[in-house]
Image (cartoon, rainbow, N blue to C red):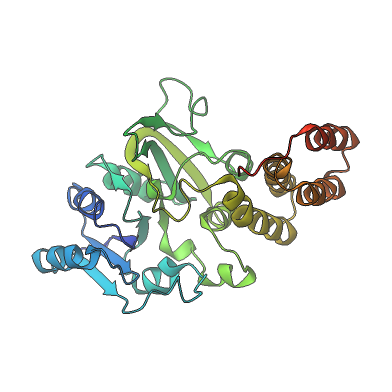
Length: 311
């Protein structure tokens, strides 16, 4: 590696993360590596003092921390692209990109070194992950990720295939490190809804993936999160169009299963609150699955559910 340039570009999105951003930044700064890093942060016009904290760290670590401060919130203005791609990836100088949003954090000081060492010695791998814990910020409860049973006991890790990834959301983006030259910004142009799932899917299409057994970070659930602690109906509104589009553009047994699973969840959500909508999802599920037995089972759920205003 070129020792004069950062080997890893840590990319971070922040918005109203004042209660969390110090823990996130400290997780970056505690990394013990034999290579230089840079921390690229995009703050989407925070109103809670997040930007003041970022300026404090920027002044203390001017050779490592490089924020961008928006004057107006792009998300509220209708921006639906991946802001990390446009505002962080585009200025990354590292051979590798690591990702962590401002409300999540790393806990292992050797995380980056272990992941980079692996990718350096395995050029056919485009991306690697590690395990993480999930923190409910309201209750303070820590729970395991979705990797249980994937890695055999005593092993340091396991290869991750597209099938494994699509069948179960095994980890969170805060755990991933990938090769910058394997990433293509144009991937997102074919989608209206481009998410972490899409990025990981395409990276696994251009190289192998690996999941380490070590736990190196925490994914935080909190009421202010864009995707965490949302209602069941909000989940349907966000996930259905995303999964439908992904299946249409990337038809495969894996994307089909993901789309059908989301439809099934939304049938249950609306069975007692909006039966016409539940029936609409039911017929969509049948059109895609052609599974008459599942159709009858789900129809019974709708017909037997009592009307309620709870969502």
